View 1 (cartoon, rainbow, N blue to C red):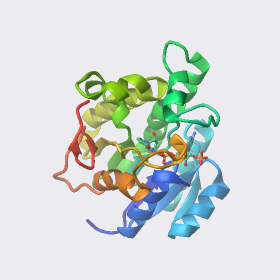
View 2: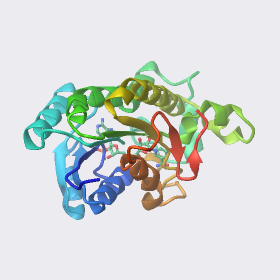
View 3: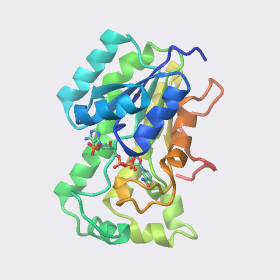
Length: 248
Ligand code: NAP
């Protein structure tokens, strides 16, 4: 593919998103590092030789301004990686399993569940809708939704799913919803040649899990980057980790 491709990665000032931005930049794409705090984004972008863009995926005005800027500066977008995500409210310390317990759907407050969905689900829909006209202007656009294996209902309910059942709560449910959004968008956008897939980075050492993950960000970024760079023969409407397809 030609190398005048433009990519936007949301929540790319740190963690897996920053590594995705770095890798896409390494593949020759012009990368926009989305960050809700512009200063953090500028710092991160500088590290990897990319450009920062202010983008809070829960803020309509911020999304509209980012879409306007991309339209003005580039006139199109080839790759959208919906990476921004949250797993907990505030900054609770301690073990992921303990934090997950307070996010169980029988006890979590509706406000907290809404906050999680606002970023992980509605944020993805809002950004995608705003950016869609620019993706349609690219030749072979790709959307990657950074999901999680914990959103897989089949794995949760199937053999070996004890741990997933133990931690299933508002975060897992939000990723299940994101998977449904991925399928819906893929079905709608196939005719436009826009491929939409969900990627699970695996349990990666980042702030999201108080750095308890076991994989590096380099490993976590691998599958989202592969899906961002799919050629025209690649899949759409799929759900993958770096070992292959995942059951929904
Ligand atoms: P992270 O280090 O906490 O990074 C999350 C990023 O999302 C940060 O840049 C954060 O910005 C940003 N963000 C949060 N809310 C936002 C908003 N409203 N608007 C824009 N950006 C926002 O976590 P990570 O592990 O890299 O997570 C990246 C993605 O991977 C998430 O979707 C997560 O669910 C998924 N994932 C992670 C794991 C894992 O084990 N780490 C496993 C499966 C899936 P601030 O710096 O401003 O907070």
